[in-house]
Length: 50
Image (cartoon, rainbow, N blue to C red):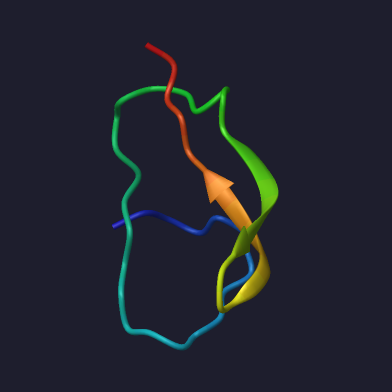
């Protein structure tokens, strides 16, 4: 279990997540994506550095 992170929580699902040890995600980014039938949504792409 991970200690207090100070991050806000939604409290909508009873789950716990532990970050893996595969390194930094320095190439990650957020952008708007248009999805047919849905519209424009904000998307997050996680890319780990080798």
